[in-house]
Length: 244
Ligand code: PML
Ligand code: MG
Ligand code: MG
Ligand code: MG
Image 1: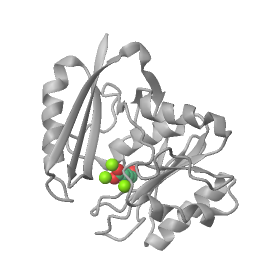
Image 2 (image 1 turned 60 degrees about the vertical axis):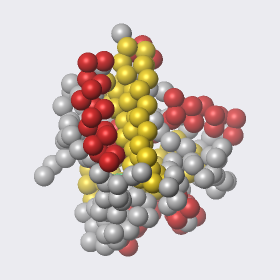
Image 3 (image 1 turned 90 degrees about the horizontal axis):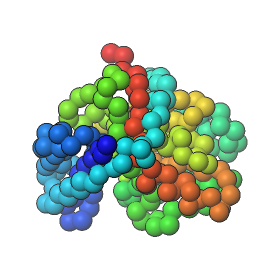
Image 4 (image 1 turned 120 degrees about the horizontal axis):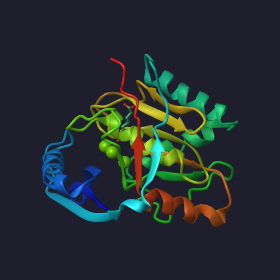
């Protein structure tokens, strides 16, 4: 059987404003196209002047089904404390000099994709440093519970992405700060630590967000990692609902 990947990307003056994607059956293309277009046309960063939609079939046999990472939330009072939590996460991964890695955060702000950082050599490994690498072809399994909100649900989308990234070959962790000015919760994630939400990573109103994927491995294997992130279709099961 075939499923369909739908992707929406909205921009103004060729600057990315928002994007979203789904993997769905044929008979749901209409409603989801509608939902993604609505979403792309109304965004806190402003209305876009261009919107792209891409619809492609995916062979169901190619899909990898993965259990969602376990989730916890750390409440912090300030972004300073938020950044301190990222430091602790990096230390827990065995990275003895977290500041060497945190320094790269500001380089992600203008990028649409993530930095792929070799944690041992501190080299950036993206083939296109302006774009970065992007995790794509992924969605939540809509039959196993979890969040199913219609509009933009930062958590629901991020847990899908983070679960996929955590399972990519040679990635030992991820750091994410939202680039949405009205969203200050970010996360750190890895297969070993799960998905840890941190409630304040930046000041409200700031668009300074981005992602760093932490790579540890041989240079010859970078292409495998990027190919998994950018091509392997993944559906994430049993996403934990957020406690309220
Ligand atoms: C984004 O804006 O794309 C990143 C969202 C991070 C979500 C963190 C969370 O609430 O769990
Ligand atoms: Mg996003
Ligand atoms: Mg960005
Ligand atoms: Mg965003």
